[in-house]
Length: 413
View: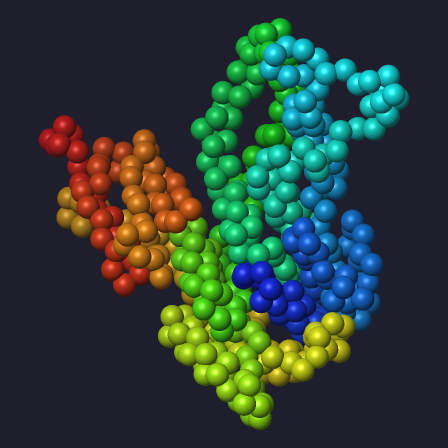
């Protein structure tokens, strides 16, 4: 079965090197492998010493390489929607009803140059990351790569990237059924009153196609037999704390985290007094990481004495850490939320490792239960049987949030 491995972690911990090491190991095993970067600050070309373009770079004796350009994906896969967003967001018409006309000097350029999709996409948070993920799903479906290894952006952007399909899909489920009718009704009003152009038929078809792709993407990313999330960290206080939060959020959104990589560990025999204190500090945080993530396979990567650039140098990680481990095995480590019946009541259990009680907020909104922790929230749809039930209590214990539902008083027979 084809597999996807997504590497995430705080910026500067060495995600790209660790992802590249896995890709090299996979290619050496004779498995057709693609190494993908979704980080806007791509560095795969720097690591492998190649100039990469907007398409997949085929490599005969190693993993194929691909630095995704989301504006290129949008222009080629969703042209009508991209064109509409460009017109809507570029300021071609403002809400005051006055059209912005190009100056005489710029009229020729305005007529010749289309609106930059990248500039307009940047105005919608998370949209660039979304099109990167959609491209990975498209490659998974259409290409014959057995392993796709993804070097993601730093933690915050990765979390936005991974939660965006579920969030947008939720909104589209609520709004899209009335979308086409609403467009027909509002089109003459919006154009006359506000000088705002509603999406045309082609753009609505693109939006519908996007919605269907989001459903496929969600299924792909949440399938534990297909997708693994791997966290790269370092033995430093700020990195350790962010790694804990990262792991908690990944569980909140039901992604399967099945590996932790502790990078840049100083050797004990360094023989320099200057590093003695650093060695003690690192050992303290390595211990904390091992205790906190005891349920996960943990890999320790040494701090090398040279820059890890080029296949030969990256290969040191393969030789020292990955060769003796079955790092590509499918492992279902984290658990999905589950509903259980308890007499006349029901219980929903959500796994939230490393969460603190004071950071968790919970409320019921319509047909969803909404769990919020820190800056992230998730809408969990309730099954039909619980539509007439209310939250009777909740308890966070040993990394598990247990929510109890009881029948509403006015529904008691």
